[in-house]
Structures are given as structure tokens and as C-alpha cells.
Length: 472
Image (cartoon, rainbow, N blue to C red):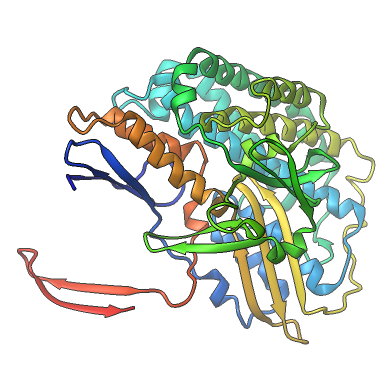
């Protein structure tokens, strides 16, 4: 084999990743790997804690999407407590979730990915970032900041905190929404919808003008997974649906029964596990999640503007839309839906109700919460003893659902665009952009199966190894 190229770290993502690209003897790409080296131990150190602490503990998994973990955890705790939250509490949880979608999707597109699209994959890295975007299009940059700020402010006004909230509890939520905060959200939402429509126009324009690269850039068939509500786009609650690479229905199942349908596999080059559809095995059962998958599954969207965009999205292909770069378009359509849904929820007569908590609990010993996080389908699964103390936790975190797809995209883009004889930084940036399209949240998605390996090397000042300590 020839040389090895390492990209370390991958930039403009949440968390840490590296890529190794192995060249053959002709300096062409033979194989590439996406390595996720982080380890988080939330599943293990949650054991022994009271179940009702979990909605407070698990948001610390991630500072970018704490709302997703907070709500998935609260839903799992509803199951442990054997309690159904009142309707106003469910509406408020959904409102919090919509704020999360707006802020997270806006961050991903405008701040992390748009520099590649608007400034160019081959632009100088010194300006190929959000600061460069400010120089080129300050008005757009300000709108991008305003969108994320609005999403974060929705989160704060609903739950009291922008991150790591203590608000959703087993059986509902701990505080109602004030009329003042409701009116503030309604007063801002039309402007935010306009900003998102501008973003969609930018994404569609770039994708249309760059079809040559779009079709070459990690364009591959796969299965797709996401929640649905009788065929409509669903982000908070509903059965899980899987479709195949031709768009045909494979299965709908209750998210609480996920272990009958989803299994995880490990590879020795990553700490991030590889989920797949159990009946088809690995790799035959691998699937994609997150915005591209959710729109491929959805037959309609319940809000009018986003539904019109869904029609345009569906017109791109006879079956599922496959090119990875269309994640950006799908992400903005979801953000538009979320902003429209904020208005729908705020206009519901129950949104200001103080009937927000069902306290009639009875410990069942098990609860599963499933939700669509910005980055895909997220599971929290808790087992407790008769006193409600956690005995076992299993998390399938959203980014993990795209692990195979990200790894495949990295390999495909490297083979398509990298020439080891004429290597440029822009070629390597295209590999990074393949990862950014999935908007991975790597710090919250890694956990281990079995015992963690540990290697400690002691070296002298010249880098010579003096001693090695190893635990397999």
C-alpha cells in the first residue's frame, strides 16, 4: 500500500472525528475510514440514580441538542412512572422541541455548512467559515444569527433555560407558559419564516446550479428511518417507519419495541456503533436517519409552506432522494415546518393551561422514550428496580443511525475527488463536507460495548517508546 492521509480534526462539526485515507501504489484512494474516538459513559454512570433525575442528567450529554435528550428522557420516565401527561404538557414539550429544531438546523446550515456552498469548497480555509460569510454577505449572516437566537429564545421562554433545562418531568412539565412569552414567540415567528424561506432559496439555487457535483457527491441508495404520523412528517411522537431504497414500505413499529427491529454492530476503527434493521442483518439492514430520511418517509407535512417545499423535494426523484448534499435542503424544510408549527402551537387554546402535570404515578420498572432529534431517531431506554432506581440504561443516539452512511460517504467522496498525485486542501475539504452534510453530534453519540480498551505509551523527549501499558 501507498501513503496514508489523515484529516485530524474534522472541522465545523460538533465533537471530534478524524479521517484516514489509505492510498494505493498509484497514489489513488484505496479505502477511507471515519474514526470517532470519543467515549462518553452516561449509560453506565446513570445506574443507581433515581429515574426522575434522568431528564436532568441526560441533557448534559450534549450542549447542542440538550432538548432532544431532555424530552426523550422525560418520555422514557413517563413509561417508568406509568403516567400519561396532560394534553397541555404535551403541547409545551412539542413547542420546546420546535425551538430546538429551528436553532439546531439554522446552526448546521448557515454557520457550519454554508461556507462550503457560498464561498466554495476550494476557498481559502482562512475565510471559508462564518467570519468569511459575514464579509461576503453580512445581511444573510445577521439573519442566520437571528434565526438561531430565536430558536434558543423559544427554548428559554418555554423551559427557563437555553441549555440543560430542569423543566420536563415524569408526567408532564414543571412550569406553564406565560401569555407574555407566548405573544413574544408569535410576534417574531413570521420574520423567522421569511428568513428560512430565503435560506431555502439559497440552498435550492446552489443545488440546482451544481448538479454535476451533487450527483457525484456520495449519491447512493439506502433504507430510511423516522417517525411518522399517519404518513405526515412527525418529530415528537408516533410509530417508527422504515422504507427501502425504492421507497417501498418495510415496517411500522412502536418505538418501545425497538429491540425487536434495531440492532447495533461495532467496528474496530470507531467507538460509534452501527445500528441496522435487525431482520436484514448487517450491512443489508443499514439505514439513514435525520432530515433527508424523514422527508423521504413523509407523504405530506401538516403546515402549508413546508408542505409546498416537500412537493418540490419529492419532485427531485421518482423514489427516495439519495444524494447526500440534499440533506441541506431537507434540513431547511424541517426548520420551516418547525417555525410554522411554533405558530400553530402558540395559537392552541390549551398552550397557556396550567393543567401540566399528572402526578398519579405507579412504578412499572421500564420506560422507552423515542423522539426525532435534529440528527435522527433517538432512543432512551431505562430499567429500574421497584424503588425507581436505575438498573440499566440503553441509548441509541441519533447520529449513530447515520454512522454507516457517514462512513460510506467519506469513502465515496474520497475515491471520487482525491488525487494523491495532485493533492489539494479543497479535495480534503470535500471529504469533511460529506460528514458535515449529516450534521453529526459526535460527543453525544459515542458509547462502548463491553470493556473499553486502554493503551498508555510512555515516551522520552525524542519520542522513543520507553514502556507501554495496555488493557484490552
